[in-house]
Amino acid sequence: MDVNEGTRWRAEVFISLRPGVNDPQGLAVRDGLRRLGYTEVEDVRVGRYVQMWLRAPDRKTAEERVGLMCDQLLANPVVEQYRFSLEPA
Amino acid sequence: MDVNEGTRWRAEVFISLRPGVNDPQGLAVRDGLRRLGYTEVEDVRVGRYVQMWLRAPDRKTAEERVGLMCDQLLANPVVEQYRFSLEPA
Image (cartoon, rainbow over all chains, first blue to last red; front, side):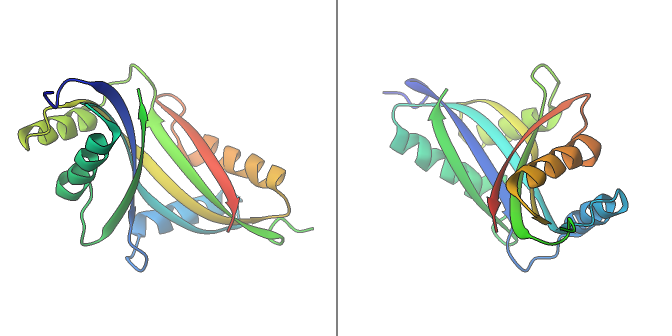
């Protein structure tokens, strides 16, 4: 079966900075929230939420392909980590 | 109880563009993936994944506060939508 056929899958990819990596954007959001009065906010980390729709013959193939896409393009392995969920679309 | 005391919560906020709103960044990622050979990718939507650690006396208060923070600062209601999950940290 051609990889473009088969089931349509929806992947949700959650990309975040690795622990210990500085997050100036997160700090800015935290400070902004505190200025608005949300003083209970202790820490904020900002990352990317990517939704993808793709075709694959089965779940295993879809998982492999999404993993490769994350490693190759979506996440910067030096400073970022990712996880993803997958469901038939 | 002061809102800064109580349980420490971790919120995960998923912010995405509303359906129908153009997503040039998503298109760029899709085209990039296709150029890398992932021709099975049909659509990509890029949003923000925000993790927050906050204190609140109970789940209901934490949910209300996170909702307010999303409405006021984290998500642009005109073009974005959000959902979030909450768990004790």
